[in-house]
Length: 315
Image 1: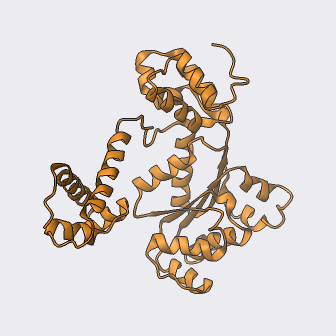
Image 2: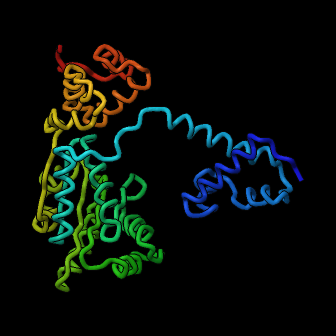
Image 3: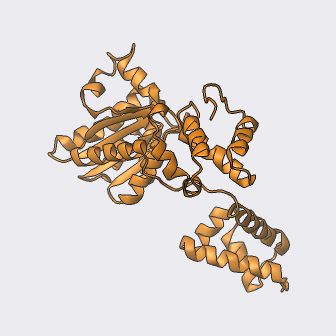
């Protein structure tokens, strides 16, 4: 039996606490990228492999997390003027059922609103994020099935039925990065709301993304999307210029408490630029970690991050 050092024992204790918070040793091990069976065997003194290599993975992981705790973390959710409207649109879609399309510039709080809505409504909402590899009919149905715990089949029709049987009256499906959906993928998710409407029930589908959605539905290809367009209840659109000064005050309470109006104004202008709120938050976070987040520090960090300050103006 290998005698563990104090550092190694501490790493095992940290793993046990993580397992408790995650709900199981298997979940904790999967999060770290190790084998829970190996850790169990080490604790029992029966591991036949290299104990040091396994525990070093724990030590490295918890060291990284300890360092992460020291850096700036952006707020989980702030009810800004834009994120509140996105949240309320999703809520309306859930209540009324049908199809809603929420579009706008990148980095203005759409995804944060989605995450907060799902956190507040875990039993009545499902969220999937489309990516370039998962945008076809079958891929979208697999994403939905995975979130719902439905059986994943190789045929699209079985997948659709399996997903449908897991959905229920009063739910809302929220699809982030919806501009990546194919036409048939969009029609497929819309079909769920129609299916429930035909039975006198409500199931909402909220499609959230950038201007690519609007360009397809309202632009040259609008004839193809006429059915979707006619079935859409709400189509709010947001731009970075919609970001309010009060939003910035909420996002950066440290500066607000210090009465740092010049710094807040600078970040407000950044948020109204193509960088959006996300860019302003990342800028402040980097400046904060560098321990220089006054106006000069923010401007220098913006240059370091290669943020285009054209049009920001002098303060």
